Image 1 (cartoon, rainbow, N blue to C red):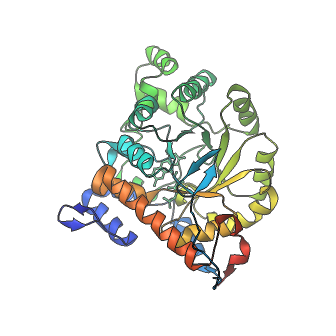
Image 2: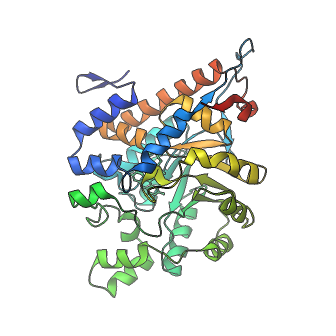
Length: 366
Ligand SMILES: Cc1cc2nc3c(=O)[nH]c(=O)nc-3n(C[C@H](O)[C@H](O)[C@H](O)COP(=O)(O)O)c2cc1C
């Protein structure tokens, strides 16, 4: 256990969130914790986990259980990835640098956001761990090529295209607080150092005006994914898929996988819980695509449920960000260590001898 300002690092997620809250300005905490609209989807994500129950099997030899899995061709300590979270500098001055170091120490991949507080080259230089690049597909084909080329050269091993953010969700708490880290320019590091973006800047009056022009691409559609496929050899994952129909089109687009996600309830309020989308997607494309999952993972038993319903691995978001806010790199590492141990114990107690055998026979609706 690490000691955080006279306090033992919290074991319980609820305590960690409370401690992180004390470390952040109110508007920053609200930005991190909140969902869009009435937060119906934010709540649904958690309710869905509570509505599925694990059916354990006993008197099975689980003494050889390992949580190690191969994802995107590389073996990791556990089926856990650190979700792309933009602008981590708002919760800790070392931001993504600290997160990347912690992920590498725990042998888990870190997915760096397009709107990071540090550039992808700075993040890449910080740790030798496996890193993926999350792409907000820009509304400028030259900038697209430039960002993807930089990710390739910096050694990122996959591109994760977020498809659920053609525009920002209607986030009521942020609007009430009048707070937008985006408009404060907090996520600009990857743009500031970019040659294509710099050229645009030379022709423009303000950094933010240019950001606003290229950042959102409400016209993003399947042809753009086909185009991206043609300009990079990196594996591509689409983040934000919630229907079997979209998963089918994704599989037919020659990409590597999808992330079943509703962006942690931050985009379309009123949409279904990610967990409730998994099973039908697994049936549709389980044999063709790697299926990753996020939105609502807080504990090891949540990961067991997501894997049982068809995920190959999960992304974790807010938990590690609260670790970062609380105690920097060491806080992120504590969160990851706890999740790994909790997952190992939960799998063992469920009678899972090998992660490969975990399927929907292990789960039923409450
Ligand atoms: C503060 C914050 C910032 C985020 N920034 C991004 C981002 O830049 N790109 C992205 O694809 N997803 C972003 N997400 C969504 C996460 O990648 C992930 O989908 C979500 O946090 C998962 O839900 P969880 O927090 O319940 O684990 C962000 C989430 C939070 C909480």
